[in-house]
Image (cartoon, rainbow over all chains, first blue to last red; front, side, top):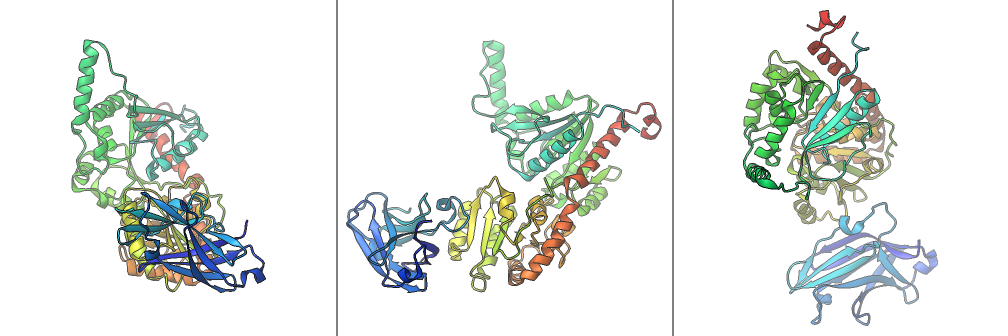
Amino acid sequence: MKPHAEIEEIWPRDGRIRLVGRIHGLPRDDAAGDWRLVLTRRAHADRRLRYDARLKGDRFESELPIDDLAAPDYAAVEEWDIHLTDGRAQLRAGRHLDDIRGKKKILVYPEQRTGNLGVRPYYTVKDNLSLECRPGGAA
Amino acid sequence: MTGRRPLPRVRYLLLHAYGRGGTIRTVMNQANSLVAAGWEVEIVSALRRRDDIQFPLDPRVKVSTVVDMREGAHIPASGLMGRWRDRRRGRHLEEPPRYIPAGEFGYRYFNRYVENRLIAYMSALTDGVLVTTRPALNFLAAEHATGGVVRVAQEHMNHGTHKRDVQKRIREIYPRFDAVAVLTERDRDEYEELLPGTRVVRIPNAVHSLDQVPADPRSRIAVAAGRLFPQKGFDMLIPAWAKLVESFPDWQLRIYGSGEKKAELRALIEEHHLYNHVFLMGHTDRLDDELAKASFYVLSSRFEGLPMVMIEAMSHALPVVSFDCPTGPSDVLTHGVDGLLVPPEDPDALADAMGRMMADEKLREEMGVAAVLTAASYGPDAVHPRWEALFTELHGQRHPTGAAKGQGA
């Protein structure tokens, strides 16, 4: 298994999305250092949002306010992909270490709204974690 | 002895043999055992909406359909007579059935066309044994399968869970059967009282196998399974789990099954912020493997007939936490030995019992061992010979010959 940021819990509530998990597959010393959560807009890879991640051993926690995701130029559906980085390693967030097949349809998380925008964390068909943004009506 | 006589042909009539329900599954288990023991067995599907049978079925079991509802199955007729028949068919498809009370849970699958075709099928049967598997089919068989076939009505539900009109019809018409077969002791008592003079036998359904991978009591997964439907009570199970999540944050509840209440249950999960702990797993073709990953099974139903998935879970050495609903859980479980029984429809009591199970690995292990022993009496080898004995005896009584004559009359 490639090094990645293994997601254990996702808490979409109170206008924020909090992520809890573990750095998986890096030597322990490499997991120290200064880690950040990075969101990359899939359709505009130059659009990025960065947040502090708290690390304790290999365990990380980070959160973002969904207001930050507002943008004037969204298509009907757009995605943001989530990584963890310390400046050197770029680790994709996802859930790969358990036995559940087909997470996209099983591990389903609620949508939150900010203004006219619906935001929902979801697992991709490859079990990676992304955010889905839908301007206008409910997702 | 009647052993040397040829065995009678046994026909099981199911509403939809191509579906996935518990009745279908247990009838196929019975058919597999009988055919393996040398019987000639046919499964007759009143309706057909799918191409394939959903459970393992021995290829020696014949399968036939009375009304094929698949797209393209009906070829429009030509000629004046044919067109007239098609028009009548179309009209009868829209008309309600005449012999089935509206309170039958399967009422919506019936119409006058389906009913007429079933009556024609049943009236033509002159030999062997016909086993009908739900009230609507039982009512039709009682009135129309009168050509000499031995008739056995299976009741997969507790009498009290039927609607009034169905209960009334059962009292009126079930006495015409050669035998009425029920699943639990409580049902036998009730039906014997309702149907004086009618032969009522209790034969539980069998699990498909007792040779199962045992679960690991250290696992932190609880499992439930069933259609996502009010009967299964998952709307009580989810709030019960909400009371435990703080004390047991590393436990998961996995609910297997699909159904029309999925969106409501999802909303309940979101309302209680359980999206990291309670998972709607959907349908699985490998329930055995999934059961073996858990360390206890939960049954939150409002009612049951005999909950077979619960017994299958027990064959994996899973202890059970269950509502003491009618019927089945108290027939199978001994409280404090192989599981915990709590008052029906009481989510607080369910939460307490699950908490007790989650807090105590030793308890899970001991009760799991006891659960395997309990499940053994629901194995195919324990159950299916009882069907063989019943069919042989009833058929011998109907067609006494030679030595059997004296005892058969």
